[in-house]
Image (tube, rainbow, N blue to C red; front, side):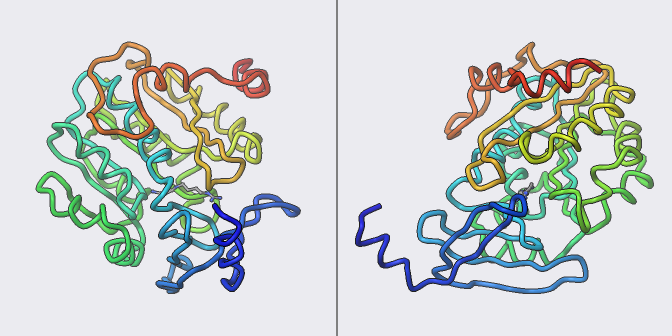
Length: 284
Ligand code: AG3
């Protein structure tokens, strides 16, 4: 960015997300596109010169046009290259549709998108270009429902479940709890794989460690992996790959072409954990 460009952004107000009490990230707000309160949360979309449109829920950055591919590709493709035959898919959360568009790259039978907040879907349809075409795909079924209730009530079984929650506060809190993962397990086919986002290895290591304990009791195979997400706290994000039968390393198919971050080398490398994570996660 040139000095002139830097100076020209001065007039814009700043949007901040605190990552801890003394630090965080800021964006200059070029244009406010939407600010609404749903019964669940505050939903904001604004435009930043560098990152494009940014979706914020209750003050937490969810996705940006410029760097969404890091997160959404790494949320979806590891499970899809490793599962023997992913046909029936469930996404819980993820009402912005970033994960859905990645899933639809595969020849699946059906994908349920279960999002609690209809306003997130409405707003994302309007401001993020990938959601509307993904919802029009005949294989997509949008259900506005509480993910936890859906799992308790459904008799469907899924091959891959993607949990695209926000941080463990507000409407996403239940999607981080033990009961939820127990219910999730009951909705999996025998070769089912679950991927869930777990937060920042720097800021959220305690909560990742707590989940590790109950996840290892529930699933025979528990793997953690990492991906860079420039606009999330700490810039590096942790995911869990969970299954009773299917591990991540025996590759069953190539990823779709045209991806911007994921490839099979990245897939293998992503499961290598730094020493500070291994020392707390690999001893239990
Ligand atoms: N879900 C994970 C968002 C976590 C962001 N946390 C934060 N900024 N503190 C993203 C949903 C996008 N499909």
